[in-house]
Amino acid sequence: MISLKGWSYAVPVPVETPDECKWYHTMDLPQFGTQFGDWDLRGRWADYTGGVDVRGKSVLDVGTANGWVTFEAERHGAGEVLALDAADPTRFQRVPHRNCPPDERPEYFAEPFERWKRGFWLAHKLYDSKAKAVYGDVYELAEHVTGADVVIVGQILVHLRDALGALLQCARVAGETLVIVEGSFEADRPLAVFVGGGAGTENQYSWFHFSSGLYRDYLSILGFRVTSVSRHTYHCLSARCETEVWTTVATRFAPTPAD
Ligand SMILES: C[S@@+](CC[C@H](N)C(=O)[O-])C[C@H]1O[C@@H](n2cnc3c(N)ncnc32)[C@H](O)[C@@H]1O
Image (tube, rainbow, N blue to C red; front, side):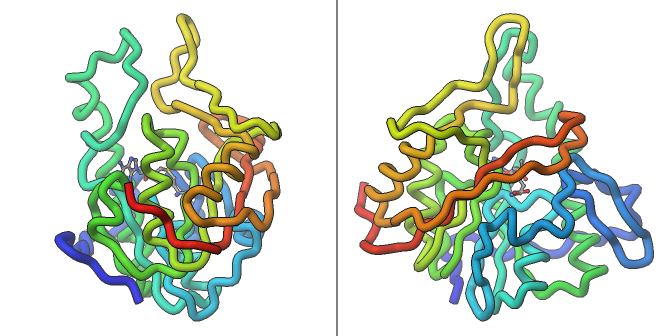
């Protein structure tokens, strides 16, 4: 059973219509129909999560955005689901390109960030979801959250400067299974590639992709054995193309070490 220490469950935000929201996930909403978002994952639960069986399990959705993973976990029989997202946009870590001064970043991201949250709460209401949400910081996760059987880490690591530190936090919380869904590449060597771009190709949103060998080796240090790796393409509206994402499923074989 999932418990919180020092963080509180979020109070649902009252939202009436999709116009008040921003859509990261494409969502089919009762009453309002399809809301098109950046990523269309509809019908792809098994692909996205590597077919993990969540029936009766406690599930933590790390970096929930509009909550597609949360609501699908619920629909697929999870016993309880907790959605985590950032407490405020200052938690976002952008690649500090010169064309985006640090002081401007919180304002720049505050508005869409609040609208993503509204999307979560509108969907939560319309789906009659029992899932809970908490707003905090993935870097502090294990101090505040315990008891998830399955932790799903979907496309958040790429946005973090210390993704391996964040993954350590997620591993500490995951009792049985870690599901990591990220851009990756095949290499036996444990490699990290910087994908933030250089001059002229500034990408503020992305830091690193890790190789399959890095996930294997690092997860083993954290007490997890990789049981499956699969790759699928999904329609990404913001990238205007089908984008390949890898799903790594890992099962606990030993306790995660202390720092
Ligand atoms: C790209 S979305 C991923 C959405 C979803 N997990 C999925 O797989 O489709 C990344 C999410 O991580 C959240 N996020 C970014 N930095 C965070 C942090 N430090 N702590 C918690 N959440 C964070 C963002 O607000 C956003 O909702």
